[in-house]
Image: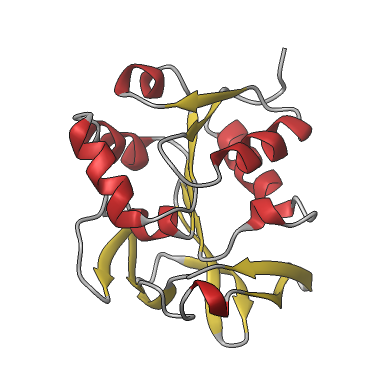
Length: 191
């Protein structure tokens, strides 16, 4: 039996399997979520990177968007890159629909195109954190109740508001598992 609640990873596109492996290495029981019925069976959810407009199309085709929106408002939810875009209250560059679960404005692809992807160094809890940026969004503004947990330069790259965590980078592509540990701790506290 896992010491953590059951964690879902949205498995519609993107590198959801890297999140699954990371969470399982930390001891979590993981379910790959592809529909609303599977979503109802998990206690926490990771929305991986990928392409946010493609995510929206898949969610709409499966009549899944409203279920996901309700979930993110009430249970621990963690979005990385495109997942962070989906969780934002406002999306620009261009504008698009979102779940509105986190009081922030993000700009899509703010760090450049795929070819300009990079590994950068930031800090988390005062120590070095490797961050993989792939067509990453930038958090341009956030509300007062949004906590900035990590930065790259002056830019917030890991934020939390209540039960919602968002990273503009890909922690699942790094050997450093502290961001996933933080999310699992949030999920356990919700039990």
